[in-house]
Image 1: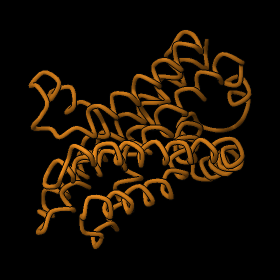
Image 2: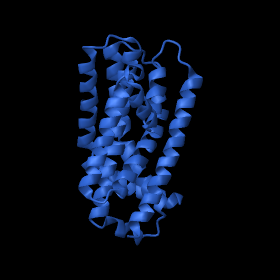
Image 3: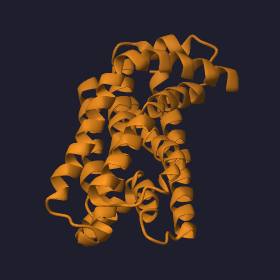
Image 4: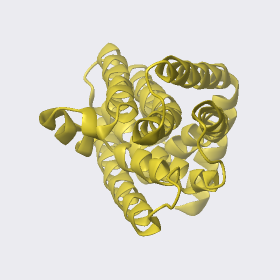
Length: 242
């Protein structure tokens, strides 16, 4: 399992480095632009923390959810899954390797977005080391969801649409403060995998962070990541035998 995972990760990382780095700049620029726009209507407090945390995790959603859904949708439509099926590689290694490679590219963008947002809204920078936990956990949850959407979509165009809708949900439900959302939409926010990464990051911007709550949010995010990657592995097996 581990040698196969490492081989798939290196192959996907090499491929994604050329094709996805320009899109990572787009994702970062998009998140920074959203914060600049929100600065005109948000002064500070919990709203500012929510905007910065949601915009930061949105970079992860753009790459790990949106682009990965498109990649697996294309892979299924063009017969690329047949290539992987002939290799002595477990299905879980294919999903985890691709998800890990795509999520790895989000760390520079999230760091730039978090620092820019903290300076823009006057938030403390001392606890941004939490990104080392938020990015992989939120990335795993969103990458698993993106891979599952791409593999379960009957057509490549539908996979692209689902990836875009998922990223839009991460934008609307992650950037806006939870207390400002209507109750039904708030429930939908609780179901979004990236929500718990956003909450964990937002808590660290408080003057005295509740580290127990931060740890709980990260634990929930990790558990959701395990479930979403398991679903993506099942979807890969299902798509590969068809």
